[in-house]
Image 1: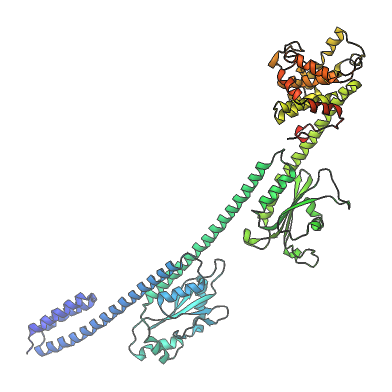
Image 2 (image 1 turned 45 degrees about the horizontal axis):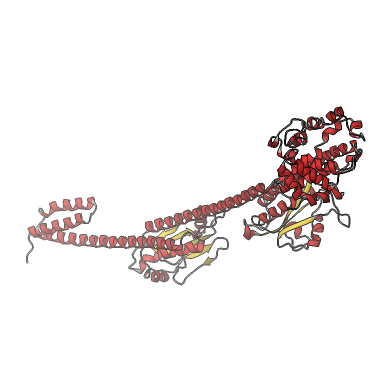
Length: 635
């Protein structure tokens, strides 16, 4: 069928529409428009020939564009699949620390191409598979080294249709990259062997090998390779930083927990610190608690005896206590401590494996040692010793460090302060007791016939007070009051005190001044304020006929009423210059008949309840007792 000019024009319009639909460059479409002018000026034959030629050219261009679009679409699908694979791998593997081998597997999963690993130090290639294209890496070695230094992936060779990618494998936070992954990609479709000639020469591989290799590869656009590799390296770097931060957070958390345990330990020890707590008991408790916090195989502790006791050999006596598995025999602990050197006696020392590993070290089972003194002021009262660091119980490491030394020093300081306070308190208590005894002896020295009177009154008062349910503080007060109740007699004339006959009324009035004299003597002593009521009122009577203030009934202090009965009993039962001691029956009769007039009936009832124990006190000559009644009374 003959082709008319209108047919040609219609074919031209359809071709132009196709060019527009494909988004062909504007210059080509303008050129096509310009050609349209010629269609109506040329001859029919020339126009048909021109139209057929143009149609062939446009058709070839359209095919090329379609193939390119198809390749781009496939490459984008590959990139998408690679990113999805990388995300799946990341999700499966979780937040654990990733090594360079794990990152290499992620790269292979994402790109789905073989990869080899270049060891920068030795220049060796590892992880080389049969499908990997054996390119000549030496020609790009300076560039690969720079890739490792910068930590960023780079295409080190881009000769169409091949591209060689170098990806630095992640290293530790404090180290530089030492391994680089190498992979070769196909970036253009290859249909002819001649297309790989230049690329084969660029990568140092023979043409046939490259040609066969390209037939098995999928297309990867250069831009996609760069973006995906950079994204994965950045992701790995971020993940490594996150892992580093996690480790730091874990370490900080562990240190905070350790610090909390240490503070809790110090708080618990501080709660136990009191003058009533025995030094050895507190030390044993502190060592037991320390063993739960300090990463040591064994903890040793001892206190020097306050009296400076020595053993049979003349060496200082030391009682060691320990927690854990002690690698030293008990009999050898003193020798072991002495071999730590003179510095260990008064200073903190740390001995590590450099010392214990030497030929002069005596104890092969002892690897590390910390010794800190328990000091009070300028004196050393004992020592705390930790032996053999146990890293699984605390921070990582093989030796003791500042944390362990600081904790031991803190505990030793608290124990030292407690030890010093207890010993100072004991010294003051002993001094106070000596003063009280001296005053009591001074009273007895005024009148030989009343020797031991104060001690007996004190003990009898304690017996009755216990029977009446007095507490420990009241028992101590009444004992001390009994010892000092007649302290005012120091101010009474000796001739009156020792007069063998009966006293005149004036002499008796003079004697009756001794409670007030005693009160004035002791009222300036702060530690004796609690005994003043007994000293002043132990001669008051239940019916108000006593002295010095004629107090009636319960107006008289409770403890003074008890001491008054004990004082009356010892006065009646003791021999005096002017008479012999009264017999027991007579004394009992006087107490029963005068109960409710001279003395408190409740106290008299308690007196008869402990009557037998009172007789034992009178009959025996006991040594002086402690002012702390609990030390010599049964519970």
